[in-house]
Image (cartoon, rainbow, N blue to C red; front, side, top):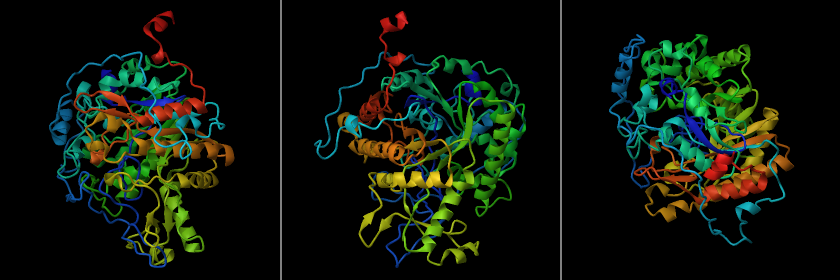
Amino acid sequence: MTTLRTLMFWHLCLLTACAAQSSIRSATSIFSLSASSTLPESSPSSFIPSMPTVTSAPATVVTSFPGSLSTTTTVIPTSAPFIPIGSIPRTYKNETLDELWNLAGEVEDPPFTTTVEAEVPVTLPASAPPVYPTWYAVTPEKVLPDLKLPKNFKFGVVTAAYQVEGAVKLEGKGPTNWDWAQRQPGFVIDDTNGDITDLQYLLYKNDTARTAALGFKCPLILDLVGTNLPVRDERLTREPAGFESLFRLLTDSYSPHSDHWDMPLALSAYYGGMTSEEFVGDFVKDFATSYATTVFKAYNGRVKQWYTFNEPHVICSQILEYPFNTTLSPNVTLGNAMYHCAYYLLKAHAGAVKAFREMGIEGEIAFKNDGFVGKPWQTNTTEDFEAVERNAAFYVGMFSSADFFAIDLYRGVWIAAPENEISACAANSSDPNWPTCNVQVYYDSATGWPIGYVPEPTQNWLFATPQNLRYELKELKKRWPYDKIYISEFGFPQAEEGIRTDLAYILDDADRTNFYMTYLGEFLLAIHEDNIPLAGTFAWAMVDTLEWNAGTSTRFGIQNVNYTTLERHFKRSALALFLMTQNAQTAEKSRFQLTSAEQERD
């Protein structure tokens, strides 16, 4: 696996899927918020009261992020120390690796350094008792029992490299921007980082077996995260034999998807990352040795769904915030950084697609979007309808060109025009709401109700809005009429799960279970009643993860991870997903569910 780790093209994401998709967790954006996003809260608008007395904070105001499940407020610095861009020479020598890790900071070594074999067969716990009477809420296996998922529907549960992998320096891996960022003062509310986290880099076989035990045909997915090669030497063009070790777990029934997220710290140090055109060259222009072409060659024929970038709006907006705002390319300002990033990201995507076609790579290629179209705040106001169109164009339309459509759909909100009207905003580049010129409405002060349920203080942007899902899907289909749509991420935190110590209470995640059941029920109705070409849905996350700058205080996993012992336990939500999907589709018996004797017979 050394080759894999050195290039950092390796990472597995575990899926409860018949054919699975990859996904990477995002970081909160000024322009869009996404599921495990927990950067300092900043959104295109503040909560605004009912019309006509609309008030909104400027679109780019960054408010302080609440302390770890408390009423105190963490004061976040406005900038972090970073070396002058370009001061680390691109000498392509291994000494550069040490220099980059010195920049990132001291790293904790993992408790062991070899891959752990899977413990099979995995036995699922007994079904959890119902939370509610059946007249109020049906049990998972009885959610719309007459509606079935389409043939070849892809249902998965996802993880992400930095958030679960750990062993960050093992086998020559270079640091990512997040290895550096999570060591900056005040950034992570519980001071945790990705040094060890779930240690999935060495426990992936066990996690794969546990996922497969949930009864799905495709329990494994690759997440081809960013090349963290600190020097571009002969290793980039060498035959990637190390890739093969991971594929020993694959059979013909598996259908991995690939995705890209992490930014190598080297690229930020060399030239400012995605705010520099040099990024395009490293991603795809240098055809023989670029990241994209290397990955295409390594996984051609095994990966059939490719995503060049995960949540591009999040990627390009997080650089405006602490601590990433000190890693910009020279002559790029906070006022234009997002647009430099988006421009070069689009060029890199276009180059990757061109290479994909010219190389004859099997499968399909796309972005993985985030965000939503949104509902007009006032249906009798043409300005609010125009605001919705602007929101859709800026959040989704900019990155909508693909072979298929994929979007991380956690929530939907109301959209309103700014108080000073769209035309005035659009004509004034100094307007705080420019250029999107719309505000997002989360809370109606006239009625006293938010748009949906928020369970977790550290994730107060994430509302459960199943009532909006079918509307959002219809609006997406209307604007981008693809033959295939993936809900590439959706998930929910359980209130205060990160501070609970009693395992029994941790595993009984009723909020998360209800979220999944209501969302999946709406997805079934969207397929059967609205004719939405929904090809797959993927839940965040297979295991508890490091939730960016919320650290481990917020949990999204359907499996609990004990961060001291690294033990895993299935939660109620995992069993609910198992029961519901068993009813909605026929799942073949996975080889991970076979006893040792059965495996020998096979």
